[in-house]
Length: 154
Image (cartoon, rainbow, N blue to C red; front, side, top):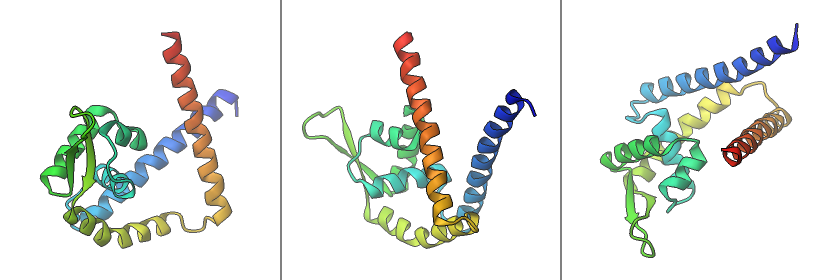
């Protein structure tokens, strides 16, 4: 197998796996009548882990662009799961906080989501998971480095 083909296959495998995981996760949420999408869950989960993040910080944590984060926050706010609070030091900024309904939603969904993760990562040892996380972190660091270099050249 030539090097170009090997590189394309590995890249495709990561993308295919990520898409299949997201699709399976969305299906699990639908089966639970969760009334929340996979993308909404990711944002809600990030906010629950660190209350008061700005929209920009949520975007960085979830690798979602500003318009996507805005749309997701709007939907979660309409559902009563999150609220925006004006930053007292900068009225142009908002901190994002969970609501009691948002916290109940996470508590309700989390056991099934953890079961989903266990099922889909079945057969992977703790070392496998550490290796996977290390490898994915390295790929993400390479991407960040590449983005920084490309912006510096612009």
